[in-house]
Amino acid sequence: MTADPRLIVPLDLPTVDEARDMVERLGDTVSFYKIGLELLASDGMTLARELKASGKSIFLDWKLHDIGATVERSARVLAGSGCDLLTVHAEPQVMKAAVQARGDSSLKILAVTVLTSLTDADLIEMGYAFSARELVERRVRQAIDCGVDGIVSSPHEAALAREIAGPGFLIVTPGVRPFWSAKNDQARAATPEAAIRAGASHLVCGRPITAANDPREAALKVIEEIAGV
Ligand code: C5P
Image (spheres, rainbow, N blue to C red):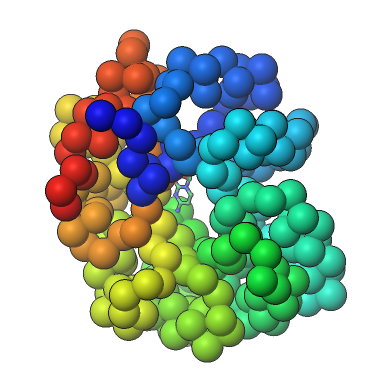
């Protein structure tokens, strides 16, 4: 069995060298990696270009959020990296700027609808008049209107997003936990199979794989679970 392009492994490691070691250990079982803020704050873009050159797909989890002009200029630079996915926050000005910048490059724009760490009470405190679910629904519709390629959502909102967006829209879900792994801090987790059945196009599954004694074997177990789903 080889890599399943629907499985994205986040390289949540403190240094680029440790990330390179993890990629080496996973070998041909993983073809898609997410690089997040921790590595981007050091040499993450160098790693991204290196992994692209070796044939991997790359999700840049920058979660851009700024005035449209700045988002557009930054997203244009990132589109030039040849990477595959870029996150921005799901505000219309931000999404439109990122879509404009990616043009017809290979970069797809994903909108982060509502951070899954935010509760309904947090949203009220922040001045929103919506529950998290209502805000996700509103932002999925706005994301479609702005022409973004997909969203990031918890597996629990994937079905709602798929119903609104229909086929073809990217729905990338973190918070994925196989039944055999620890939940860690993912309170509202779903299994890989359940996330795909709910409508996810891609899964982000980190610690169950990267913290396993044998990351290769763990990746293969996840791939086996979603094979045929
Ligand atoms: O190790 P684990 O599978 O929990 O990693 C999940 C990855 O997805 C991490 O990089 C985390 O930052 C990211 N993420 C998340 N929940 C979100 C958005 C991103 O867990 N709502």
